[in-house]
Amino acid sequence: MIAVIKELIDNFYLVRRLSLYEIKSKNKSNYLGMTWEFLNPLIQILIYWFVFGSIRQRAGIEVVPGFEVPFIFWLLGGFILWTFFYQSTIQGSKSVYTRLRMLSKMNFPMSVIPAIPIFAQFYTHLVLLAVTFIIFQLGGYYVSVYFAQILYFIFASFCLVFAISLITSTLSTLIRDVHMFLNATLRMLLYLSPVLWQLTILDEPLLTILKLNPLYYLIEGYRAALFGTEWYFLEHWQYSLYFWAVVLVLFLFGAKIHMKFRRHFIDYL
Image (cartoon, rainbow, N blue to C red; front, side):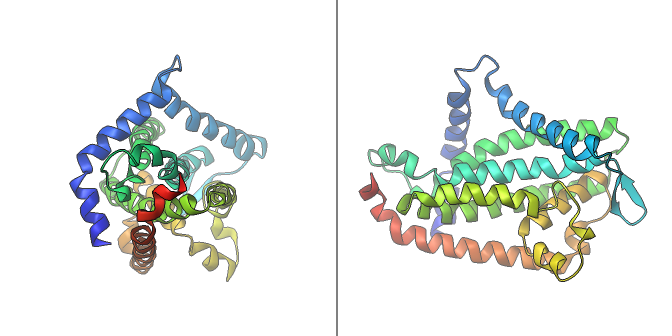
């Protein structure tokens, strides 16, 4: 794990440069260019709002007791995090085997490869977060001191995604079906996370079981920061400890299998 962290720090500048190049090359043939990186998630948000909010005439969502907000703002607060998590995890899982030919011709630490698509999605996430921030201000949900915790949850999100990508990129290189299975699993996870509906309407023990999903912690933290309701990571300190324990276990496992198998990756060309 220490070796992976050291490689990531030593090559941080190169990762940022390559992630920017990846965004530009991906959209160079489009008339709107990188604008599609932001338009796609915004269109998805409008579709989900139309289906789950407008058609069903959904009432406001109670974020904390006595504080109710319109569904579209509640949806927006969670969906921007989900978009970053989903795209980063999917792109990160195939990051190694799609670059094996390039890696075979250059001396480049493979452990930092999953960080390239994650950073590429991170830039998009920052723009979406800025757009969301402006929408919240226009909607009357003004910035408060609680918004400062968004930096903590951004860092926590990156750590979780990188730990997962370290595992899935290794397994996907060894067994290509892993990437397809992950894609199907994440689509299901959208409906098992508090993105489109409130999990708090469920009874125990189902609620506690679904809260084991670390995404619940991140999404609720984002909403607490945007709506300015509480210091979520402090008020729910037990959940914070659980989240970082999960990240640490995933990171340790991901670093272990990556270091064990990466010398054999070129054999899978």
